[in-house]
Image 1 (cartoon, rainbow, N blue to C red):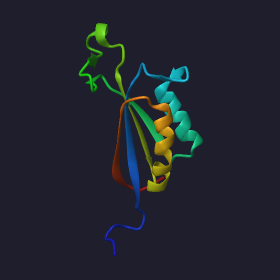
Image 2: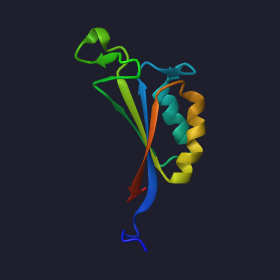
Image 3: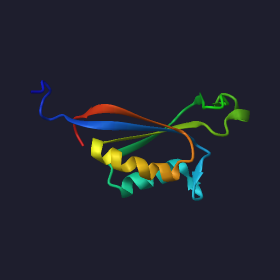
Image 4: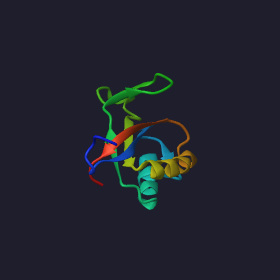
Length: 111
C-alpha cells in the first residue's frame, strides 16, 4: 500500500529541447508541438525560452551577444499521465527532425 495521499496520481514530465529558429511545415516548431499537444488532449504544455545554451554541435547561442542570438534554446514541457505521453511520443517523432527529448516521472496533484 502506498504512503502517498490519494489526491496524487503518477504522470510523466516530457521535456523537448529545441531551438527557436526551428520550423515544422512553415511554422515555428514549438508552436507545432503545442498545437499537436492541444489536438491530442494533453493535460498541459509550457514553452520556456532560454537565455543561453548549446546543442550537440557545441554551437553557443546567447542573448548576451546579438551576433549569435539567432537560435536561442526553447524548452517545451508537457505533463500528463503515462499512457497519454506514451501515445504522444510517436506523433512528436514525425514533426521533430532533431533535438533532445527527456521524460521524468512526476506526481500530479491537480490536472
